Image (cartoon, rainbow, N blue to C red; front, top):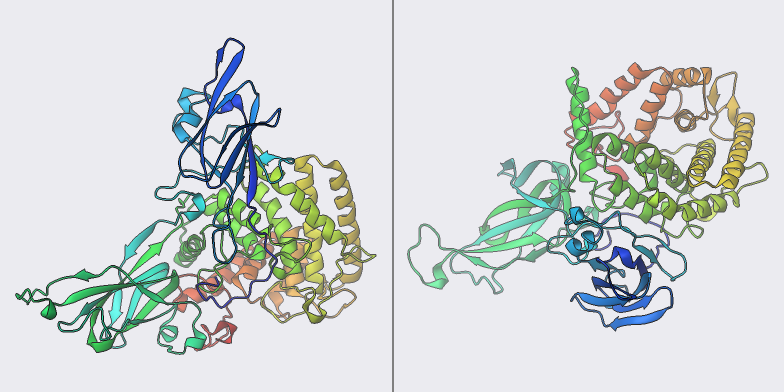
Length: 601
């Protein structure tokens, strides 16, 4: 995000990559074993990105030592039940960061065939490699498939496809690619004969991109949301069809530029000097996801909304599920709650959700809230529970790996509570920040409702790992929070949750939506809340993220038809205004001029 000059604020204390890691495995899993008298012999073959030491795990006896190399290490292992591999990487980059985390690469065929010849060519998920950062506490390794053309999985790039504009406005020089894309823009310029292609007479083109024509026509660098820096590609020379001379000075030549970083855009405009002719294309990148779900109905508007929603999610799937490809290009825990539900029914890609939860959970919990917001720390716990509700984790490897961090986070939140069990939030000088939605409304009750929800989700997760103590403690605390919220924030006469504790006259749309979605409100109260949401009188939600939760709450309250009407008006309204992917924020009452002016830029 920093290199691409994305205009985004992303707080947090982030975990640094460890330079040292340990791996271990039983000798019976690393190669076909054979016996010579009383000696048991096995062969360990692997590559690594750091210095290597191999020990007999039972005796801590050094078996092998080597410097970092891309070559395969072959280690003879005798008379031991297990081996331990220590990898230590070197600091290579100028900023002091590790080039890559310690890892090992296994000979895929030889490794997989070690247990069963039928496994040849299959990734070894069933084998027993474990890893540790200190050589004491161990957990299951995460395996990645081989990456063509890349040594390590995190060096791999998503596949790309070369796309051309669907139409061009020659008068303004705007190229329309038809839909939003994320990729590298490629510009080929035909340098007129007589210009020195490598000299001062050749000036690089200037690229402007946008999701609207107005943004694409804006020349102000201060309002640009991303870097459009161009770098040159290898020079290609070609003879003009009209020319027959072989004199280099009079040949037309081609020079190619490409954006250094991927850009998110639909429209592109290129300014070139000397009236050079150009061609433009985009190497659009896509996460290799397969559609597992589909939706179509007699209402063309709803069908179109589903298709554009699925495409929006697909664009936001990268290494993690991103909040958006243009401004953020980063994961956010609150938005993930909606994205993972959509993913479950559209792509069923569990791996990308697990990776998103993992990276969000490494952002300095106990020193900084997830994404810098109290409610996003709560959403992170909730998302972990949703993950196990909607995706299979049959061996519970991911759950057990993340459980210590989940428990630490819940305990940390408990330590921040007042005597009533509610979260103490100090928003003075930005110490504690609450987001909920892009709406300037009171959010006191809403965040406490999420706290109740997170406690229940934490207890459910604790039950899955068999922590009876945490289940009992957190369920008891959750019931206490519910009783306090009912006493301080529920107006039974009106049938709604108030905006803040002990404020019986100011009501919050967001608190009521979250109370229904979380299960805090039940029975007849669901109908009463749904009726109140439909009557208006409370500030509207400001984002599709929160609007999704409102539609879910209406459905749970018996107002599914009203929720569908909201969908047609809200998401259909964006489509009517020319959106090919849905926006981060939308107000149906905003003017045509202000629809693209989010963040006042």
